[in-house]
Amino acid sequence: MDAEWRTRLAGEPVHLLGGRALWRPRARALLVADLHLGKGDAFRRAGLAIPGGGTALDLRRLDALLAGYPAEVLWILGDLLHGPAPRAHWLAAWRTWRAGHPGLRIRVLRGNHDRAFAASVLDVEDAGGEQRDGPFLLRHDPRPAPGAHVLCGTCIRWPPCPACTGAGRRSGCAKA
Image (tube, rainbow, N blue to C red; front, side):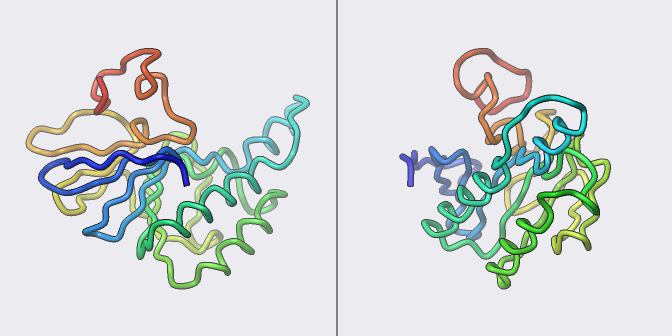
């Protein structure tokens, strides 16, 4: 697994992972964002020459993270999907991957690309737009919330946003 940085946020130990995720050992929770499953399929349907294999690569990255961190819950902080899932080419790969992790609770917060999200099709939980979890308010967007420590998809996205890699800053991002 890639490098990690151990620190504390809101009084809780966390590991910021080079694999573009956040590990909360106390909660046994792994947080990722912006998988955009099916993005290549959506672009190819629109006539863009995008190579295949993106979903398989993302699922291998998740496997590597889960092998290194004993998560009981996987939080996806928005944009699990890029487009509709029911007849998507990548759906079989997702279902095979999901069957390999039967005890893993997967909670999905909706992002701006999750308009076609159907939790039952993907065997995950629809956690709505935001959720409190321990000392954190989890959401996709980097909007501040008075009295809450926000962990947002933009701060741990897949791949990282420019604000989190030093190329720019976004209002509300933990790195801003």
